[in-house]
Amino acid sequence: MPEPANDALTFWNAFAEAYNASPGRRTVSAVDALIGDLRGRLSGAKVLDLACGAGRGSAKLAPEVGPEGVVVGVDLSDAMLEAARAERQHDQVLFRQGSAEAVPADDASFDHAFCNLGLMLFPDAPSALRELRRVVQPEGSLRVGVWGRPENSSMMTTAAEAARRAGVELMTPPRSNFYLGTSDALAGAAEGTGWTLKDTSFCVVRFPYSDAEAAAADLGMTVDDPKSRLKDALPPGSWPAFVTEALGVLAERLEAGDGALELEILVGVFGAP
Ligand SMILES: C[S@@+](CC[C@H](N)C(=O)[O-])C[C@H]1O[C@@H](n2cnc3c(N)ncnc32)[C@H](O)[C@@H]1O
Image (cartoon, rainbow, N blue to C red):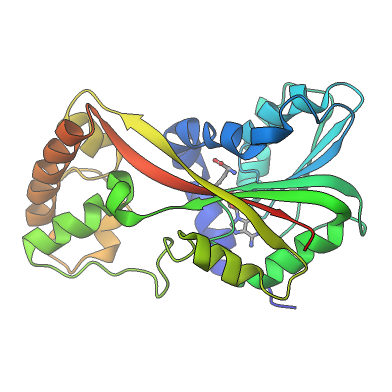
């Protein structure tokens, strides 16, 4: 069984505070789309929220399962789980540290599983899907949200476009986070895992900003940002040119998006074959 990369743990522990303060406030809205046709039908259910982050999706699931149900949020990052425990509002929500590669749960112990914005990050999506199949009872479903199409995701493509315009190379991970963003890709990842892709839909998460400067400050794209992670992904000396281009890209994209950057999310519903 593959191990989660240690660098994923290091990354998410370092990024947790910034993620939860900004993008994580918006991404949780996609959990409504994941619940979908299960809304009103989860009372008393035991559900898993894998890659739960600060547990905001788990908090959306809590009223659905009600006081007789249980929501178990599982995440790799102890910094995320610390935030989740600090924000926890519902007695029926529990948090456990664990990974997609080895979910800390017995076989068939959940009625349904949810995973918002996790699957495309895991090192081996089919292996994670098999593990989710193990812990969900045979008639249960799995609902995932993954990054959709880059052309509809101005939030996640601004840095690459700014680097292109500045004529500099942005170091990117070997595999794009968009790689599961089509029905075919999701269905392909599920082959041989015991899940069949039953339904897909797209939803859009909006990230509103008053102007390009506000967006740049929030996204760590200002010249004097001491904590910007992006700076390390660019060649030395290219930061000022990158930042100038980023402001232009952000202004164009905010105008095109009616004052917001966007992330398209592909929602996949898996069930028994
Ligand atoms: C983009 S955040 C999503 C958080 C939350 N579900 C949301 O919708 O905002 C991704 C989360 O996946 C977790 N994660 C990354 N790799 C993981 C793995 N292999 N197993 C479990 N969790 C993982 C990270 O710690 C982080 O909390």
